[in-house]
Structure formats: C-alpha cells, structure tokens
Length: 423
Figure 1: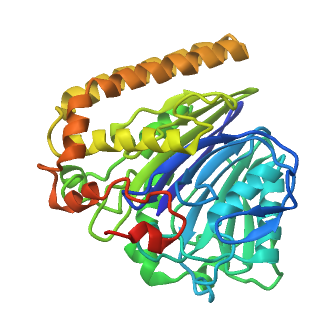
Figure 2: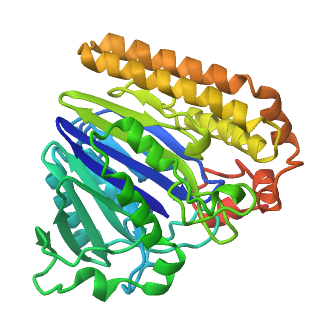
C-alpha cells in the first residue's frame, strides 16, 4: 500500500510519497552515480535485460529488491509507484516488478514524459509480475505518478495495458485505478473506461484506497503549498485511528500503522523544486509521524543517503528500534515529539535560507551534513531505550512482539523462502 501526491507551485512542484510495506521490510536510501553500460546485461529483481547507460539516481528501495519505491534523478524526474488491484491474469509470472519499472525509468529518462514512455515500452516488452511481498506472497499491478520540469503524469496499468493521464495543478494516487480518460496516450485505442472496467473491487475496498485518496486530495488545496505542507500530509492520521495507532493500527490513514491485515509506512520522501533549487527530504526510516525528514541535495552520500546498502540498512534498523521503543512506552512521546518538531522547523528554515541565497554546492553539502549529525545526536539520546527494546520486546503491543523479535532477520535475502527461514 502507498500514497503519492503532487502539487504544482509558482516556480516548481512538491512531490511526496509514503511507502507502505511490511513493517519489518527495510527501505534503503541509496545513490547510484551516472555510468555508461558496464556490461551487456542488467540483472533486476527477477529478470536479466539488456543494459544501457544510466543517469544518476537517488532512490528508496525495499532491501531485497533491485527496483525502487520512489526516487529522483539528475534531470529532475521524480517517480512514485502504487500497487493496484486489477482483473489482469498472470501476476505470479516473474517479470519486471513495478519497482523495477520505476528505477529503470529514472535511470533512462530526461523528462517526465520520457519516463512515462520508458515504463510503457518496458511493460510492452517484458510485462510485469512476480511476488512483491516481503514476508508473504503478494501480487499486483502498478500505477505511477511521474513529475518533472515538463509537468506531471499518472500512468496506470493492468497487465500489459496502460493509460497515461496528464495532471494539472495537483493530483494524487493511492492503491486503486482511478482514471477513465481522456488520456494523453494508451496501449491501444479501445481501452474504454480504463479504471472502471479493470479495477478489482474487493482488494481495493479492503485496502481503503479510496479513503486515503480522498485524504490526500484534501491536503493539496492549500495555497501556497510547501515541502512542510507535504510532510504534514504524509504524517496524517484519521481522528478515528489516532488513539490506537500502536495497538491496533489502520490502513485508512496516510501515515499507515501496522494492523492485523495491513501494511506500515516504512519510508517517506518529499521532493521540492523551486526554480533551479531542489531539495529531497527523506526520513530513511519508518513512521513519519515519529521521524525527521532530513534535507538532501544532489547526489551527496551523507545520511540518510548512502552509497552502501549495508550502511543504509543499519541506519533504518537503528531508527526502527527507536520507534518500537516508543510503541513500548519506553520514551515519553510528548517530550520526544516536542523536540522533533523543533529540529524539523530548524531544518526547514535553514533550507529556505539556502534557497533564497542560491547557495553553492559546498554550502548545501555542509548543511546536509550538519542536519544529519543533529538528527544522529537526537537518536543517540535514546540509545538506552533502543538497546533495551532490541534485546527484549517487553511492553510492546501484542501486534508488535513477534515482529520485533524477527526484525532484521534475512531482510536483504532475494527470495521469499530465504527471508522466511527460521520464522
């Protein structure tokens, strides 16, 4: 489950996404530099395909997959994807995953429309399919929200069929097909009512996709709209969910907390473009309502962005134990949130100053490093609680005890069988 939001602004756009996956599934934040094709073939999650040269990309990906949930590239193209439930056949056949399609498009595209065309071409050439679940089988098709200097598009798919819609001032996607035309382009001219005819209603209903889509849309009407507004949207809970977030969870809120049947927000991402100035705000960890969005610039390998997947995994796991210490009541949540809000405000104010002065690359790198170090110090102040919950999950709600015992177990193993060994 996921939600992706887009808002055009006077001098650019703001893009945001929550990646909702299994609560024990680390989301790694990585940079991959631009490079020529170093080999003839490229191994993605399940397939091996012809290699091409690639653009530099900054991505957030599930630890066991090649593909990514969200990311941006050195041409300013930004993409997020959603699982959608359709009537298509053959989802269990191992082809390109939606995450593979997203990362390949970022690596190969200079504009948003280029990225949409790249996904459509790959879908036609290779198809989509294969298990996308971390600790249980999970099969689905995908939709994509793609933004760049040339505007924003929603690409919805059902098997090998696809339909492309251009967005205006704002738009969002959740876990449902939603567009019935008119389309900018499509896989064939006789698609008709694309979403209405292809949407699988049962899974879509229980995913509460429509409820979250309405919430997301309600946040996008504010003017002016900033990165801070997008962060607050991604941290949102329905009032009915707020009192039982840790004990019972809900799939109905944008900031999703694990429920008996649902996923959990395991990574969050905001990309804000103001003229030639771009900031990518990344949590690098789960639960945005309890986490800091850190500013990142360009392709700087400074936490929460890493060149090493092992380092990114350690970063995510450390903060996951922190969150679970809060769930277990080992940290005063009111005091914690008060300090977090103050730090977040200072990060935003600093970024605004850098944008206003047209800061140099060196100044941006220094600020990213300073913010990273301040967040690390904030986490370190809770080291005792982190170590205690990692050793013994006493005090956690029943929903979380078994999950915490198994946290970090075979998290990067490429197959479901390997990830489930010893569980």
